[in-house]
Image (tube, rainbow, N blue to C red; front, side, top):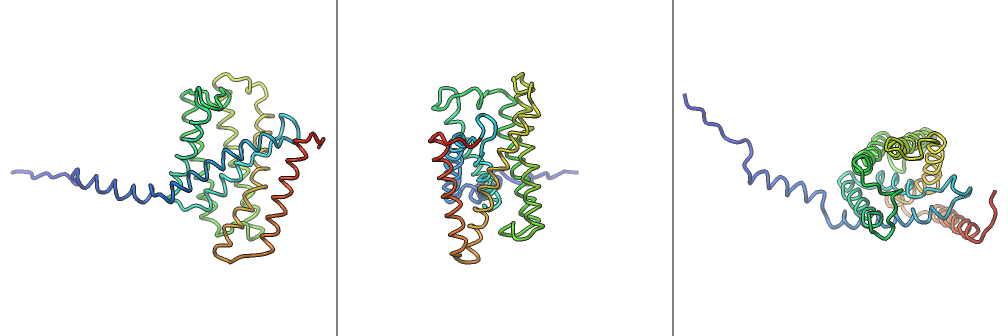
Length: 241
């Protein structure tokens, strides 16, 4: 008895499938979104370093607010490009001999790569996926959705803190001596950044469906003006203590 075994998919079929799926994720529009997101993300990171209300203690980590809102607003197919662009720019800025080369941000260890390139993206995608599945835009339209949004934000912030600080503690960093207090400061900085930016971005994204709102535009303008004025006070030496 002769068995006629044929491959389920030929090499040509595999290639065509790869190309077809790649076109769904690797588009010029998603590339533009990724470039805009990663540039804004790191710009807000620099701004956050200037917004410490208590020196070396609590920072308004604005990128946390942008990151959460961006992944909630953006379609699932654009997520890979957002992550790739953010990590590429991070590597360009912080890798050895780069413009912002610092061992504190880039250790180059196996744990560092696992945390930054695998674990952290999984945390933000999982959190954004849960919020998108449970609620509809603008995601903070009721008491239930708002409280849930804050709880998920807190869980994600603590998860990021445990990942980043846990990796440093495991590798013998001095952060292990003050791990829990540092984790609290890390989480608080993330939550402040989320409260400052995420609601504004989520509401602004909803205007595409609900139309222009003069009241919303005024609220956003006043909020951003307050942030700018606060930054000017801080850089001028105003004492917030």
